[in-house]
Image (cartoon, rainbow, N blue to C red; front, side, top):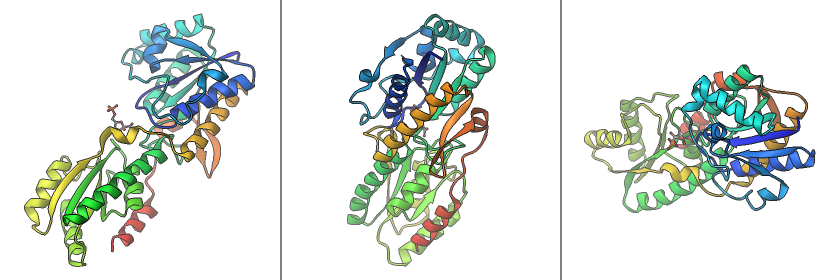
Length: 324
Ligand code: F6P
């Protein structure tokens, strides 16, 4: 392998830049060329490439977002799209890929490998932490810190007005952000798609916490939770069924995806980038680099795509006990 292409794809996450920097510098360390592929698979199909050297990635370890930009490509889902992408890579003499993204990104990589026998290694980058084969995806820790900071602020106003707040956090299909940030911010209830609390039990729990002397309450709701149709309907339902609280909703939205990465995410990104490049150089392909038991470990990419990230049940119990 003489030239590695690096790309970010899907939803961006803090730490992606630190991972790009790590991939580029590890290539430089091993005297291999590195090419940045812009705008994910879309840019790959168009040949939107730029040679990167160790100095091209200066001053980005602390930056949120991705300097390589990101996109979701429908064309790459078609065999013709992948053929065009392969042609562009071959013309540019790129002979292996580091793909930074989530399971959509990895699925594209698997197809590509199958059709063209092209070496690929994945680095999990998404704030949702919904990837099997790693306890932490890049950006998850930063997003948690952002969410906790926001909830702390919401709590100030919630307690001044004796209000109940529903705070919606990201997590289309999973509750990792909600559960971890909820415990970290001392939420009274945490609603996640993996656990169906049910509306009645939610009401009971809110009544109980009011009776126990709490004057305000924070309920963290994962975007993907199915308890109400959405967080606003949940508010209407609670208001209609209990008069104890005035209720407000705060949807944190895309601010959770931005911002300077935490030290944890920067360190993790640096470790993952080194492992990704060195694995390709050792002839490994179709793996995802992950963090397992605090060690950087490889998981077959197919398993990473098919497996389900599990919610931490112990944290659920901790949350229950803490809201006593
Ligand atoms: O990055 C993952 C995620 O944050 C999900 O939790 C959310 O549903 C989704 O991205 C929204 O992404 P977009 O606005 O890019 O469609």
